[in-house]
Every structure is written in C-alpha cells, then in structure tokens.
Amino acid sequence: MSLLDKNTNLSNIDVDEQLPVATNFNYYSTHDFHSDQEIQLSCTNKSFSVLHHNIRSLEANFDSFSQLLNDLNLSFSVIGLSETRIIKNKDHINNINIPGYQFLSQPTTSAAGGVGLYIKSSLLYNKRSEFCYSEKEFESLFIEINLKNQHNIVCGVIYRHPNAKLDNMTDFLYNTVDNKIGRASCRERV
Image (tube, rainbow, N blue to C red; front, side, top):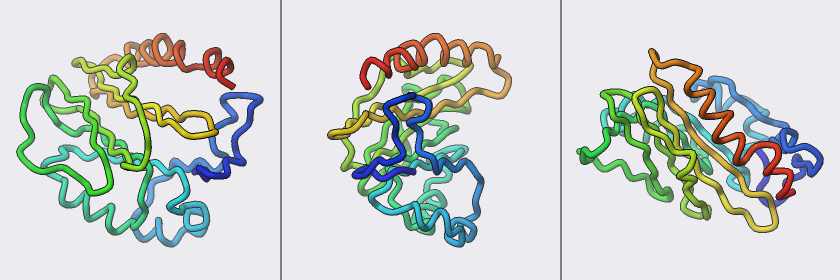
C-alpha cells in the first residue's frame, strides 16, 4: 500500500526495495479488516491497494464476492482472482461486471483454474501478453499500470493447478517474467 501521489516508500537505489514498506499478506475476516488500525490508516482511495481472492468459480460466487467488496468498503486499485473457472472458448452465463472496474481474464483449458483481474477504470494499463499463459499446469495474467511521473507498476495473478509441477511455473517466472521486467531491465528504467 503506497500513496499514488506521494510515493515516499519508493527508492531509486534497489528495485526490490521499491515495494511499499507496509506490505501486508495476512488473511482477514471483514470484521478484522475494519478493526485493524494499521489497515485503516494506510488504506484510502488515494492508496494503491490490491486484493487477491480465490473465488472458486466467478459465476457461481459472484454475488457473495460483490457482497464482500461492499462489506470491505474500499475501492481497491486491482483485484486479482484465481480459480475463476472461466473456460476457454465458452461464453459467460452471468453478468460479472463491477461498476468502476474493467475485467480481464485468462481462461483455463481445464474444469478448474483460470485467473482474472478487475482493474479500476481510472487506471491506464497495458496487458502484458508475453507474461500471460494458459496451459494445463498454470494460468497467468499480467498488466502494467502506467503512472504519470512515477515508475509503472507490473501487477499479475498466477494460478498453479494442484497436481502441476512447481518447476514449470517457477521456470516461467524466472526465465520469462524476471528476464523481461526483473532487476536488469528495471534498473535501466530507473
């Protein structure tokens, strides 16, 4: 979580240190989310905030997901979803639009899996197709958010199927993603 207009947590020295200092990967109930003083102090509509949710079928659980977003009462910049169960070459049955967001999906070729991103409509972004992958082992979807007078932010979501080899996904991350936006290329843009 970092302020988009005053990115004091970013450093030009080391790319890995450019992550916001107040990164939080904890699990929260709705009550815990609203009761946590640190979250309340750092989460504003001017903050860059990301939420990940393993939805286990976007169409089947869209109503409860919409209720969760309403209960959290925070306009997240990006919402990543895993296990959307959106199947390649199959039409959606339900409306999965959320007002104020654009939806991107990387469908799956199997009965489970699939990933998606809801991106706040006010953000300018490009889909990073070279990092988007959909095979029987895992799916990935990446975007690059364009920010004025600041470094762009690359944001993505990956889902690895339970029986898939971890090595294939880590090879993809290290040999594809890291080589293109990793330490060397990021340093060139600093």
